[in-house]
Amino acid sequence: MPSPRNKPLIAGALVAGAILLGLGGQFAHSSYEAADLRHRAEAMTGGDVKRGKLAFSRYGCGGCHTATGLPQANGMVGPPIDGVGARAIIGGRLENKPDNLMLWIENPQKVSPGTAMPNLGVTPRDARDIAAFLYTRT
Ligand code: HEC
Image (cartoon, rainbow, N blue to C red):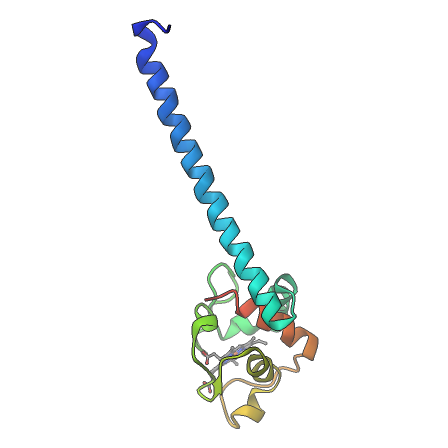
């Protein structure tokens, strides 16, 4: 039996343990959700989220679009990338589905002649990966 003097210590250890378990659970839960979102985005598009994120930076998309967590994505010309996965319409014209999103990324001027988003010469493979990345932003 623990002596009465040790009781507060034991209680403190139990509380600390419970808090750590809780935090661990939270972390596991949110990283599980992120992985789930990534898998779904990749299944929808056939693209690779990691490559898409890199391509998004390489093509300079962040010069015109903000995206949380990407320091260089702070442009205010186009709409924010956060939430794009949940929007109904892309570029004011197209139903938001994977083929349309890739078409937009590759050739916005064809979809919407004169739109302020220029054609950036994005290859079909890169457009697929970028679309996967964008669909993680719900
Ligand atoms: C020179 C600025 C500029 C650059 C660079 C740019 N965009 Fe855009 N983008 C825009 C503008 C402006 C719109 C809104 C166009 C419209 O609605 O006609 C837009 C719209 C979009 C949309 C549709 C969003 C919505 O909610 O309707 C997506 C997706 C998108 N851009 C992705 C990209 C990607 C990916 C890149 C990089 C390959 C990129 N953009 C580079 C300016 C830019």
